[in-house]
Image (cartoon, rainbow, N blue to C red; front, side, top):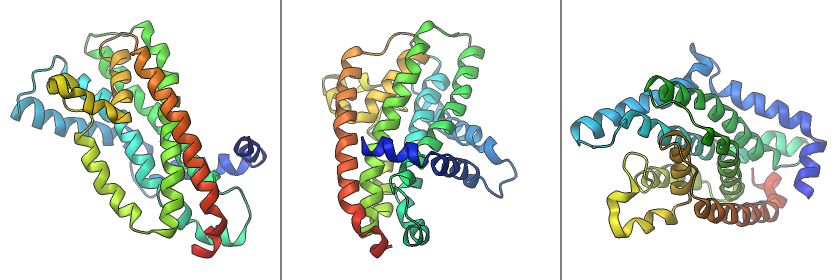
Amino acid sequence: MTIFKNLYQYRELLKTNIQKEIRGKYKGSFLGVLWSFLNPLLMVLVYALVFSIILKQDIPNYIIFLIVGVIPWNFFTTVITQGTNCIWINGGIIKKVFFPREILPVSVVLAGLVNFLISCVIILIFVLFSGMGFSWHLIWLPLIAILQTLFSLGLLFMLSAIDVYVRDVEYLINFLLSLLFYATPIVYTADMFGNYKWILYLNPMTHFIEAYRSIFYYQASPSLTSLAYISIFVVVFLLLGYFIFRKLERNFAEEV
């Protein structure tokens, strides 16, 4: 319960940090927050060109299929790449002022969630104008987004703490995320792997992408078995990540 007490006690600092993360990301940019829309759109256009035209992916409404996968993936990778060094880059403040260190990764993740929810407008627009329409299954969206947020937070607790001691982590993570992209059914369906598709489901992001696709693309409820599995995984992963963070934070001020 310590983390909730700390976040509530320093809620104004948390709010300020979230605003700084959102505004600072596009500081000096002419288009500003519009890049939250443009980045995933440009990614979708490139993948649509490569996979639907050049590699002949035969998936109905492939643009919608892509965008429902790319935007949640963009949320995940943005949080991890921007947050891995969040402790290190705030070293000056950490040395001078006391505050709960977990506020830094939590701020990055919550700012990413805000940008993700804004980007979900793109999905809704594409689904609407494609003629697919909406369904009541969208009520699952908050639960899936919260689970992904907590999963990202657990991972970021680990990475941001370890990065203070091992600076190579932030460089290694970019490479690993590139590999993980192709191990996640974003530009293809898991069914393409036939009897071996279970391997893809060892990847937690596969469950999230499939859940988003269920409610937006297939207009059905997500797999309850998958949600139960990922919920247990997220809780364990979050507790483990926070445990590692608390163990390593003792020497943050000396290391940064």
